[in-house]
Image (cartoon, rainbow, N blue to C red):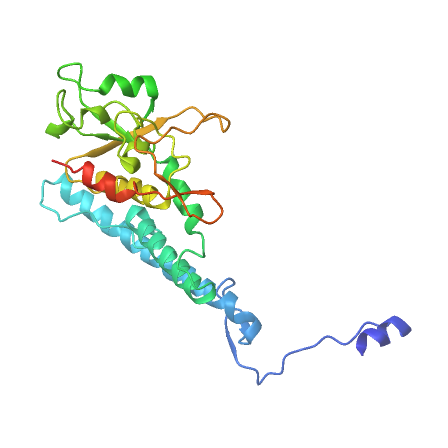
Length: 282
């Protein structure tokens, strides 16, 4: 409570003096001075000792460099130049890559532990990054795609299915006069489901049955997984007017009377079974 006494009486408090029995060490900054070896002084004393050690190592290195230079001047052989032991080491590219690797691994493990996902449930956002990666894919218009129908010798043959464009130049059936040449230069996705190769050369999939849609999906996977047919891009279709009529089927379903209320019911028999049987890759 010396501060309270000072504020009341105005007298200076007695100066604290370390007992003579307190351990003391040499002050590394001031010669012939002893300082108390207490916890508050240890960081300062350790740093001063480190600096002295570094300075000594540097001076010894300078002396070795001087001797080396004298040997070189006399034409004597010398070994490789010694690096200054007190010079801070640079991280370098290898060290930086190593740090980034450990950082990514730590973040992934933390995500698995805390969020149950190595990517912190950011799969959808990571997938969007692919759109910024440059690729060799091309965006075609319908008129540009039509130019790759095999009519120009030496030009590749492309077809599209539900927007995806594939190079089918190696397929004999897609060459002019081939059995599937009607698929070249156009997105005839609807025909893959209905089997109407002459009248359904369009990407319009409105009104297809579930079986016909499965037929379209089957052929999409066929081209995507084919060893020789490479995907080269996408075709940009104009929007379809919802009010426009749906293409009529080349084999409309028969109408049957149930004999009770005289109402007609339609039964679709032209699903994926027909399309898969009609369009078989050669």
